Length: 183
Image 1 (cartoon, rainbow, N blue to C red):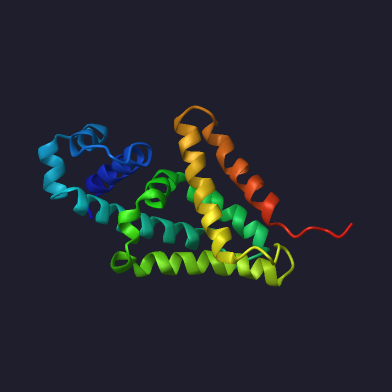
Image 2 (image 1 turned 90 degrees about the vertical axis):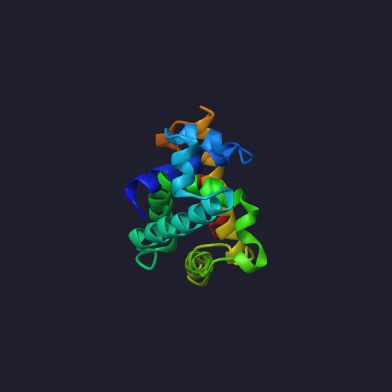
C-alpha cells in the first residue's frame, strides 16, 4: 500500500471515527483529494472500510511489538503499550465502532492475534498478582480499546490536551485494573 493511500486511510479513519455515516465525498474532502481520486484508491465504501481494517490491524500489531509487552512488569508494559497506541488512536476509534468489520465471516485473524496478545498481557498481570483476577483479560482488552478511542474523541472535541491523553488513559485503566491491597 502506498504512503498516499495510507494518508488517505488515516484521514478517513479520523473522520469516520467522529462521523460514521460520512459520505465518500466527505472522506475525499477530509483527505484533501477529489472523489474520483478516492475511488481510484478504493472502489467504494466497503473497500475503504476493509482497507482501514487491514491497515489498522497492521499498525496496532506494530504498536504491540514496539511496546515490548512481554518485558518488565505488566503495568509498565501497559504504560508502554498506551504510549505506542496513542498515535494511531484515530484508527482504533474508527475500528472500535465499525461493526461491519466484526461480522462473523469478516473477523480478521489479525484482530484475533492482537486481541490475544493484549489479553495475554492482562492475564500475565493477573497471574503475577498485579491486576485484579476477577476482571476477564478480554474485558480489560476491550476497556483499553474503549479508553483509547474515547481519548481520541475527547482530543478532537478539545476536551483533553493531546499530551495528557496517554496519562489519563493509563490512570483510569490501571486504577481499575490494579490488584487491591488488603486493608
